[in-house]
Amino acid sequence: MVHFAAFPAVMALVAGHTLAAPLGDWYQAADSSVAAMFHKRYTPSPSDANFTSNYPTGWTTPTSDTLPKAWTDKLASIQMPNVSVATQNNGYPTYPNGESGADSTICSFTYECTTSDDLLNPPDGVLALTFDDGPTDYSEELYAFLSQNNASGKATHFMIGGNILGSPTVMQDALKAGGHIAVHTWSHPYMTTLTNEQVLGELGWTMQIISDLSGGRVPKFWRPPYGDVDNRVRAIAKGVFGLETVPWNQDSADWAIGTDAQYTNASVEASINQWLSGSKTPGLCMLEHELNANTVGVFENVYPNMVSNGWNVKTVADAWSLDWYQNAADDTATVTSMAIAGDAVAQSSTASSSSAVSSTSASSKTTSTAASVSASSTSAVTSTTASSAQSSANASSAAAVTSKTGAAGRVQVGAGWAVVLFGAVVGVLSI
Ligand SMILES: *[C@@H]1O[C@H](CO)[C@@H](O)[C@H](O)[C@H]1NC(C)=O
Ligand SMILES: *[C@@H]1O[C@H](CO)[C@@H](O)[C@H](O)[C@H]1NC(C)=O
Ligand SMILES: *[C@@H]1O[C@H](CO)[C@@H](O)[C@H](O)[C@H]1NC(C)=O
Ligand SMILES: *[C@@H]1O[C@H](CO)[C@@H](O)[C@H](O)[C@H]1NC(C)=O
Ligand SMILES: CC(=O)N[C@H]1CO[C@H](CO)[C@@H](O)[C@@H]1O
Image (cartoon, rainbow, N blue to C red):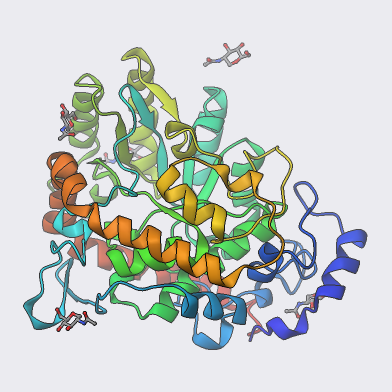
């Protein structure tokens, strides 16, 4: 069991002077709001015998007793859209009273709805390179390939907290190579089917473990598993945690190779190569995975074509000219003290860019924070229709592949995989 109360601020301060963080030092003042949201505690190290006991059980949605009060307090302070918890129907979230997921109040990506805050269409000519589901046993092969091609610093890795818990040093290898680390939830669920508190645990604990293993860097981007996101989940991601939602505008379907006869190494490579030699307007944000030999192999085969076709390959952060983390420009920049989901982050959703880092508000301003968060979620909701019309053509092909051909099969892949990984970790868990 995880007890946050067991890590008083004074302890964190003392530990900060006695234990070296694995990757740079932790610069947050003990009384900063980022320290309240993401506790420094002592620095959990992968070599600690009790490493996993600092976190909830891997690959299962964290329970409410694991949630720090700072997270639940923040959740209570934000304005939530009127969106119910969905149930799953063959890859499609379904809402009560026959409400459509395409409705602008709900705005489900599975139903091809996007908001102006969603990051899915990069600037012309830019390819946002993304790999979901790491770290896995195939990650190191991918990292070696990226490194050989001087491309480590051009990739965003949307990592699963439960996988990081099982392979913390692999995640750190991606970071040390210069890769950009982002959030893909703790247990890869359909997020729209979770309660608000479950959403909190899935995002918050993945941010916490990334922060702990990266010298205090607080992730700035997350990708919803299966693309399953609606305005309720977006509001929590942005309003509580300051996270930008990153769907995709093309699904490579690399994950389906070997589980759906329609998709083979050759067919997936052929689709990707077609996109790579096609229009550069808008840019490409392709769904790809560091999941297995197929997905990594496909990438290695198509990467030369990304280069030869003249794509400007970048991390998600660089594709949109944003900082890599909420409190650091990249993997090597100084980690600064800042408010999480405070004024700076809420403003950045309208003013677009990353003034987050320059803000050093250490005290929490509850009133103005709540006001600006509600203003930003309102603008997200009201701008939905226009941006949905703009990007539905590309989002639609992505969402259609995911929901119609993939989502159901994907559940089984995910669930089977969860069992395997959990089995490997369970022996050392003491919670
Ligand atoms: C793990 O061990 C460290 C150092 O001995 C200690 O400070 C920390 O509280 C322990 N964590 C848990 C969850 O017991
Ligand atoms: C929330 O949405 C439901 C279903 O559309 C509706 O019946 C209810 O009146 C709404 N509540 C508020 C406070 O708008
Ligand atoms: C990577 O960079 C090194 C040093 O700049 C260079 O020698 C090498 O040719 C580059 N490799 C590739 C594949 O671009
Ligand atoms: C797909 O390619 C990978 C390596 O690139 C290989 O390991 C795998 O066996 C291939 N799959 C099939 C079905 O040929
Ligand atoms: C509406 C929209 O953004 N359409 C674009 C979708 O992507 C293709 C290339 O993959 C572009 O040609 C379209 O303009």
